[in-house]
Image 1 (tube, rainbow, N blue to C red):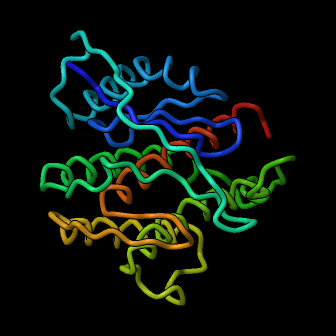
Image 2 (cartoon, rainbow, N blue to C red):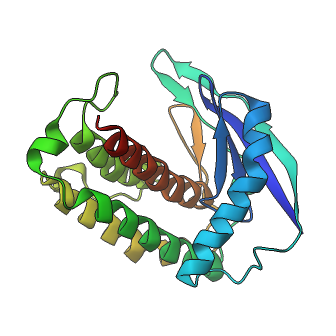
Amino acid sequence: MDYHLGIEDIEPENWVAWVFELPGCYARGPTREQAVSLAPVAVKEHLVRLGGSGTHPEDTDSRFSVIIAEEFRAFHSSPDYLVNAFFDNDTLPLTRDDIDYARRLLSLNRDGLLAIASPLSGARLDLEIPGEVQKNLRGILRHIGTAEWWYWDRLGQAFPRRERPDDLFELLRTVREFTLQHLPSIVGSTQVATCSGEMWSPRKLVRRAIWHERVHTLQIARYLKEGS
């Protein structure tokens, strides 16, 4: 089986290889070559993870190859906004199977996030992390919730900003409930929207939402392991 990659320099010295057939599956590295080289490992780990949750029928021992299908170079549309990838693959309308897959994987991701975040004390959440853009674990968790809301806002479909809860875990719950409820409404949609010079579509929303929570969950786990 062939898996097709879309690769981009999502941030300076941070390349991502997206696996189109497996939304939420990605490899990353400081260079284009490293991200691509790690993609087969990412596919295997992703299939093992999904196999454990009963959400994907793939045989994780089967042979496969990865093929670069698309490449995107990020660019600035304004001094403080970096435009990330919109692939041809992102224009494909979502199917009901895509939505079922997304809902299950989002649930799996959220279970993993809450397993490590819910037991943390307020003091631990607020402990400053040197060099962290979001300042502390609370900031990272809030970023997860607000970013998912922001993806819907790119398509003009988010609920009003004033209705976002201030409480951290209520924010995460409210935004995720909105996502799960509204995913079926974008089945078959060919909408493409442009905001700040960046193009968005339902498939890109799903791709980014699954990836974003997972990558920051792993970041939080790393900080906790390091004692940061």
